[in-house]
Image 1 (cartoon, helix red, strand yellow):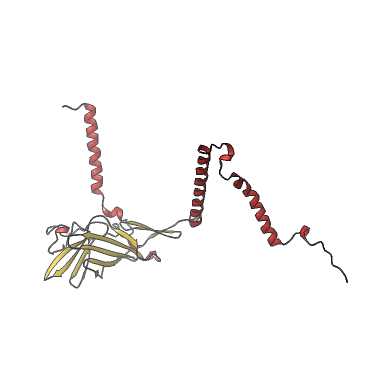
Image 2 (cartoon, rainbow, N blue to C red):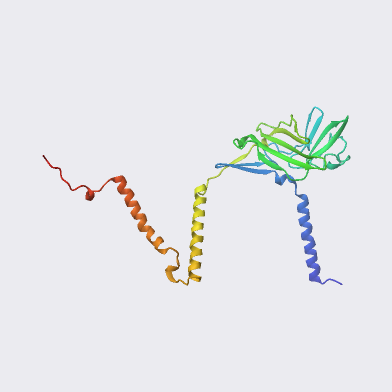
Length: 284
């Protein structure tokens, strides 16, 4: 069946919209996730690891396409906020199927580790996918930097890599240490200006816990009044101002408050002239 002109136009518009959405999604990278904010009192610490800064147009991303650290017989390759790219010195290790295979080893994951097992270098991906976790290293001292954590799950192990990005305004110092805990959990650190936070002073608003408590009390009081009014109006058939529950109590509150304040004032000021003793001294 031939399509009418309006139907063809609608179909073309729909396909064009789907194409634009798919293109935008495919071009999205994990760099959008490399932002983290931490509030400490009236200070807001903003970390934008992938944003360009002075002398580092790619932010925390290594311009070589990867970071590398070797300790003993273990070698770690990783990239922060993006996938690794090997234009030189690619990993040459066995069992790289979960990170690109033999021809593209290391180019389909965020972190790859190689261990010498029985004389062979065996690889394992320890960071896959765009999801990463970022947190400050020391909540009492946010100036230190942040920790970027990525993970990977397989049939054998659940692996992870934690990279501590220490604030260093003087330049970059690549990873030099590598620690291992458990079967497949690794940790390293590097120094980079991207680990330094941009601090924004935020003025506190609200009353804190007291304001929250006051709002809760007022909401409960309003719910009590509403429920009482509904019950007295619909079930007890009361009309007028008497529909308000405990009306006598609420109308007497101003008088009771005034009386209480007066008694407190008299207690601190002492007896007034009118209440002084009328007895006069007697001379013997």
